[in-house]
Amino acid sequence: PLLIIKFKSKVNPLLSKEVSNLTVTTIVNDENIDLYKSETRDSIAIPLNTQSNTTNYLLIKGNTSTTDGNTDVVTFNYQRDNIYINRACAFKVIFKELITQLEIVEGENWISEIEVNKSTVENEDETHVTIFH
Image (cartoon, rainbow, N blue to C red; front, side, top):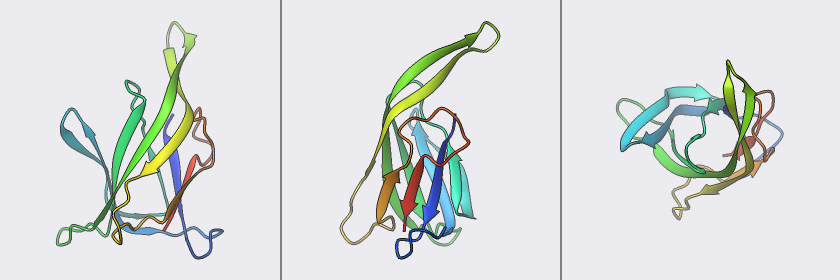
C-alpha cells in the first residue's frame, strides 16, 4: 500500500493547505527518482521501500524550472510484515510501527511539524501522516 500524506495549515490545523510547486524525490540505488515534479497538491501517495525498514524522501517546496526550492528531508521508519495472500498474488507487505523524522536545518525548514495519524499502513483508504506547514 502507498503512504497517504495530507498537507495542512500550521496556523489552522483543521484546514488543508496546498504546497506550491512540490517535488517529491527518493533515492534508489544512488539514483534520484521524482514521484511528483513541480505540482501543487494538498495530498500525496508515496511508496515505502519493501526491502528496507527505512525510506527517505526529499520534499521540495517551490521547485520550478528557474528556482531550486526549499528542500526538507523526511525519513520514514517502520517494521515490515509480509502477509501471504494466495498463490496468484503471493505476499503483501504491511508497514507497522511507522514513525517519521524531519531533518532540522535551523531557520530553513518549510515543514513545521509531522504527525503520524495511523502507525500501520495496510490500505490507502485513510491518511497515514499529516504534514503541517
